[in-house]
Amino acid sequence: MKALISVSDKTGIVEFAKKLEQLGIEIISTGGTFKILKEENVNAIEISDLTGFPECLDGRVKTLHPKVHAGILAMRNQPEHMKQLADLKIDTIDFVVVNLYPFKQTMTKENVSREECVENIDIGGPTMLRSAAKNYQDVTVVTDPKDYEKVLEELKSNGQVCLETKFYLMQKVFEHTANYDSMICDYIKNQREDTSYPDTLSLTFEKVQEMRYGENPHQTGCLYKEVGKCEGSLVTAKQLNGKELSFNNINDTNGALELLKEFEEPTVVACKHGNPCGVGSDEDIYKAWQKAYLADKMSIFGGIVVTNREINEAIAKEMSEMFLEVIVAPSYTEKALEILRKKKNVRVLELPSITVKQPENAYDIKKINGGMIVQTIDSKLLEDYEVVTDRMPTEKELEDLMFAWKVVKFVKSNGIALAKDRQTVGIGPGQVNRIWATKQCMEHAQELIGKDATTSAVLASDAFFPFDDCVEAAHAAGITAIIQPGGAKKDQLSIDKCNEYGMTMIFTHMRHFKH
Image 1 (cartoon, rainbow, N blue to C red):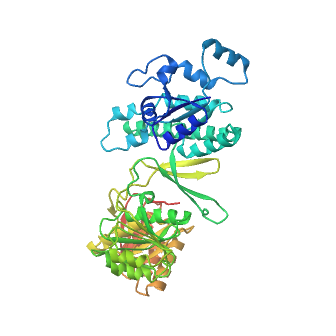
Image 2 (cartoon, rainbow, N blue to C red; image 1 turned 120 degrees about the horizontal axis):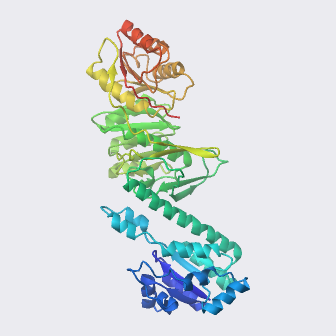
């Protein structure tokens, strides 16, 4: 029996080749792999000695030869195939151990040239893998070093690799080559700055971890990450304490992080079930934390807190006195970390690149039954705004309106956010009509913070007001300023009502639906 070995990832390859050799399997190899095997005293045959043809074109051509592919593709149960091999003096190749040029590692390097990336597109490797996988009944094909031990165990126990294992290895080959080609395609698309939606969409992600369960205990769950640079993403965070992140932890924390990225000043976001429940900004991160916490002391229980500044001892001490699921920050003081680690279950994550945003052309993807819907991410906040009322907003009102507009962008529709002094005082998410969302957040504000919570506050709505009822409710609660997209047929009703009450209203001409 013969094994052809040509690997870029050389993890465990010397030991694997030596054990194959001990089992009486002849080793054929190429290039750098051959050199390493010979240095480690593996009695390997160089590929050019098999083919009778030298490697050429700087190694671009070495395995693309009939003596390689006929030896792999010949069906052993077909007499005509075996007769042709004999006539052509070609031996069968029974094991193909190949993994591909490191295209991913190349394309993610800093300042890498297009020429270097293109040169790291493997041609012979995928061809051998696909040939061997197609003939899986007769050829054992291994592309993942984690499978070396499984193959060796079966060879030692049974003298061969069973058909079921070969079929499993076939699947891994096509997963591997599909992902490889998808990475190349994505790289070319980015290089061309192509923002069009292709006729067929191939995406590749790498498994990070399996989860105990999904959104509910009867569902399974798994976390994958995009291939390439994921700065600012939860998948790159370092966990410093606590249990494994759950499906819901990851989903909710991601939403909190994306909201946090809208702020440059010290800001804390508390989140529950995918919606913000408290957001605070200030010149001092401790004061920002206090604002976020006091915005909704009830909902933060069992919630997620993210901050764009270092967590200090004072903040950590207060956090440790409540039940939080996840805490994410760019850094922690030693004392803060010591305090938080006393809570064995709280998941404490460090994400130095916490403020880095996604590229504007990144995809937002939602699975539907039988397909998926794809859009670019909602990367804009607003391009301009128009004051549509007689009264202009004061400087303070404008500051709070911009704050509230950032928050409502991440509130599920229909969404309303109330803010005062760069603090949310009420959030109304996910209602089936806008007046319910408006009334809900006002009631919660007055219940949780106090009767005066909404006095002199501002209101942000993620979409236009179809009627003037939300303005009526806002005025009754003491709200003085409103920011909303505008665009309703009856916009003038809301404008007139604001003018009647001496309120100010801004149109953004941009909505932020979130479903």
